[in-house]
Amino acid sequence: MKPINMIKHGVNARMVLVLEMLEKGDQTATSMASDMLSKVSITAISDKLFAKQLITRCRGKKDRREVIMSITDKGRNILK
Image (cartoon, rainbow, N blue to C red; front, side, top):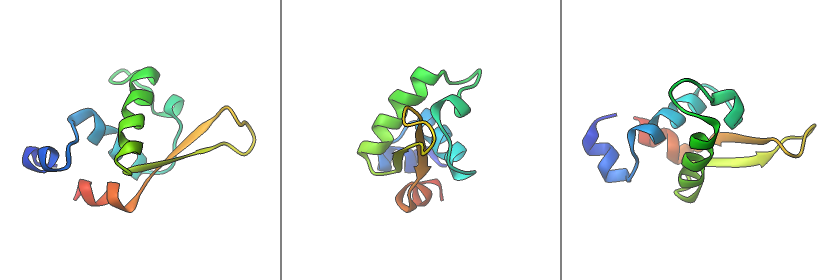
């Protein structure tokens, strides 16, 4: 994503990284945690992405404590 597009859509590099991870498939914060982003960071970033309607969140079916995140069409359009 070009920096000008990031500014236009109000997203930063970490938000784009999370969107790119979710573009590969639905995931939890734990499954996305890595050396680059902690689980806490992903949770904070996902709050911002959810507020912008770039992702959705739903509870896991087997474990209600689990929150599964998915990218929305609006989120996919930002990555183009």
